[in-house]
Length: 406
Image 1 (cartoon, one colour):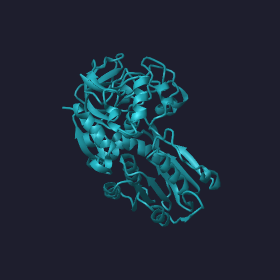
Image 2 (cartoon, rainbow, N blue to C red):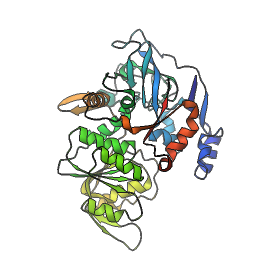
Image 3 (cartoon, rainbow, N blue to C red):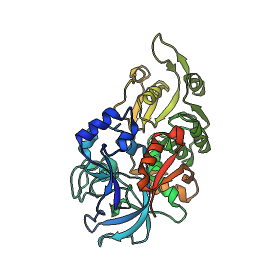
Image 4 (cartoon, one colour):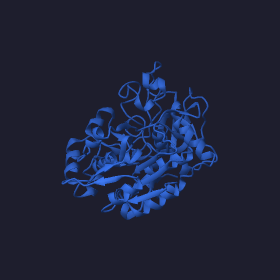
């Protein structure tokens, strides 16, 4: 089968890192670490695993960070090369290990890509996995499979940017008949948003700022509204086409990221900007909670400035090594900074539930409909055009792009 893999090569990395900022196509050229090539189908590591035939593999912002070389090289300590990219997924079971219970061939499933203790074959769970926080597992480099933060950066599991991947039984979630494939492939990014919101839930009288009009930003709005939040939601979106999408899912006001946007954003948040003799304005007032969904230096800097005194900024955008961030608002306004990157076991309405199951339940109950976000579908062989489109959202107007398999 053909797959899109990321390989370990310092010369290719350096060439791409140097030329990429000036000529982006180098990042998916034969000179890059990204390779479209023939690979064997992944095999079951043991009888507790199943093989899934992929229907859709989503192209995530974190995948693009890998390809665009925006991630910190430090993360390479927790992956194994070569790995097939892709953690957003929906597909059908085609092979079931003899020890797998409750699943059978032909069933539609999604895979929780976290690779915690149970997946790695440890009967004694680390503290994080005991809590249900498998994404924070302390054994990411140990056990019966190779190192990997997630399915999609572990060489033994495969990824959704190929026709097949394998998953441990504990990673599988059945897709209800009421949830179509276009919704199902968005369970993973929606779960990222649900986890961020449930861990940082606003009061109804609060004002919330969401920085970023991409899929995660939209999913944060959708999560707030589907969970019943009545907080006032202001969003900052980079492209005009994103404004309409964010409003459709429940934002009260959307500000376009253009020249002079501080003068529009400040009053929307009940804040006042003050101009120093050098640099960006400092802001008094702002949002009670800021969900930062981009991860760039500018977005982080804006988030800090527009968080009110004693407020909280939630880092959802997977910032790597941002530049130009002024830390002054953190101590000046006594801001709390909270990281949020994955999902696991949530407390919802007094009960514990996995984020994926909650997402599927909300979809099945008609409380959220995310299928319209899938705006572009590509064949795997057309990956160069797909990546170019996602990297140029302003021109392509991509919301969510996926690789489609028959």
